[in-house]
Length: 75
Image (cartoon, rainbow, N blue to C red):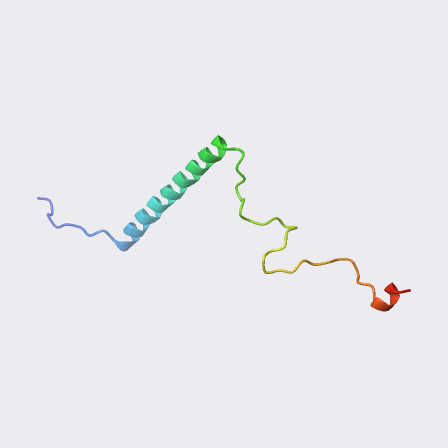
């Protein structure tokens, strides 16, 4: 006769299954994002990020030109 005792699932197996479900969900999200990007090629992927040349809101613009002393400017 077969044992009628129910075997418990180990935490390791539960963790593996959870990671697999999460990985599949991420893959599906990436697939949908690629589909949307292909359907709308006009939309830039990183519209909200500033360009490298643009200063951030917290930063002051840097002037690379040397500043002449005020005495030399009056001559």
